[in-house]
Length: 235
Image 1 (tube, rainbow, N blue to C red):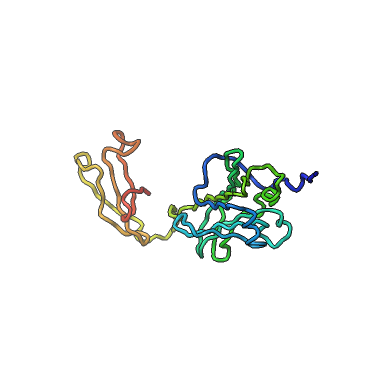
Image 2 (spheres, helix red, strand yellow; image 1 turned 45 degrees about the vertical axis):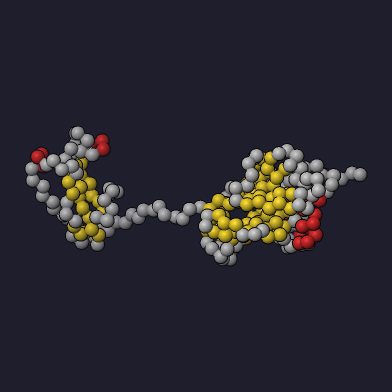
């Protein structure tokens, strides 16, 4: 018989790619996708917990859509769920295509934040449900016997730990520090560091290179101001 092609259109919002490598975080294989659909009915299948980035996750698969809005009930929806934590991550949802020996990917390019009020994030319109249930749809996602494999890649952003702070105060206490160095031309210490001094509520040191430092090596005397607590980063 004839079938309407519009039922099998790929949703336009998705960004899809193909690859040959399997999922890096977790995968779920259903020996019978149809049996899973019958068991969960209008709800979802939730995987066992797995760990990525020191956080525990589960993989949620809605065979009839993951939103009460009936707009999405004709699509398979995929979600990642995290424990009660605040992190930023991105996910890649995948589906094995046995006929083409490749993996169909839904790539979410924008990292999203999980927190106690948003523990579940994912894709409402992964692929049309008809691609998994219609025997006349030769897309390769359901093998003979009804087997189907879903996968997920979770990428967790590392904790924020690189920053700097700039401040300016015209009324600094003890704004002038005098450091007398005698016989600079005969000093064999390179570099030469002053005693710590306090200014603006912080402790500092001066460091001088009689023979120069960096581009000044061999042609200049180099002088630097450093925080006493950090002897490597120059101000």
